[in-house]
Amino acid sequence: MKFSEQILENNLNIIKSYSSDHIFIQDKKYNYNVIVPPENSIIKCNKNIKSITQDFILKNLTNNANFVILASNNTECIDKTPIISKLNETNIGIEFMTISSGCSSHNILVAEKRDFISFFLFNWSMGYIFQDLLFYHFF
Image (cartoon, rainbow, N blue to C red):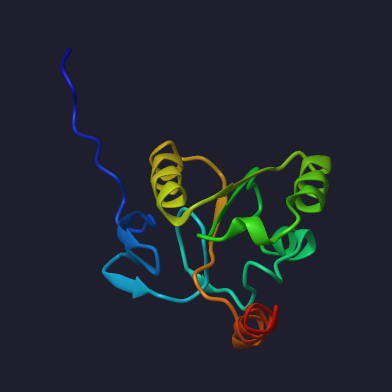
């Protein structure tokens, strides 16, 4: 089988590399929470994995997006059911993934020219970290 090289546009938000605490897109390192559409500007996200809501996700969707990737290395700490239910009511799919899976899925969907948006949530707010430390220290 003969393969042909696929040329992608320069303005696409292809993730070039990643680790558990950052992603590289168009030669820029993002080590903070971001909302990444397939193309155009990447938006700093002021939510963390414990504070993100279905309403916040819906507010940040692009015009024709019909799928959401929510990538974090700690998706067990949130109740996914209300988010999934609300988005499904509006015919929008959502997947909760690790950073690694989110990066791979993001790049595949960009190459397929799909309408979607990705949330990469690396950082917890200091308030949550402090609360968690207190909880584990005293219990």
